[in-house]
Length: 199
Image 1 (tube, rainbow, N blue to C red):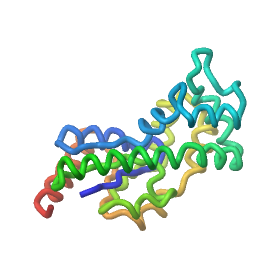
Image 2: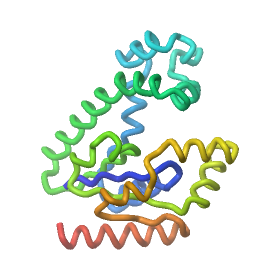
Image 3: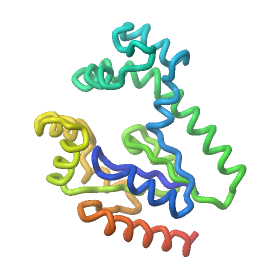
Image 4: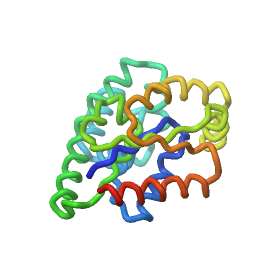
């Protein structure tokens, strides 16, 4: 069974993924895969440099993700260009990992942690969509604290994503992460137990 775990920025997806890992799920993190496909000497990084110039690299030849983010944040065409380079490679690698998992553990539960699961249409690849939600004020506070950014920058990042309410239409399970970490853990354990009872 494949679960697509998603949620907007600073919703707590990674914490939910960590709890699921502790409960025995295999988790594939799309952000980690995205980092792998742009490591030095990869075809993707070469294409990115060809497209955006060598200024987007650190001195050690790795991708300067903050610089890249600041470019694509305000420029939809640039974001599109980057996604055309990276998305097919990310998808290829994730598909490879899914196939390896289903061969090795046909009855197992695999969690795909993908921030843009719904936006890129990957919700169609999974058996269930689990959405992590958070109250907007809490989301804003957490994002500012986590990324050390101003309220304006945080609001801009939140506004650039598909609204939570819209994502709820695609979700089989909604996990509300407005409360304490203990509360979140309890929710995840209950959902996991219910899943195992029915799986």
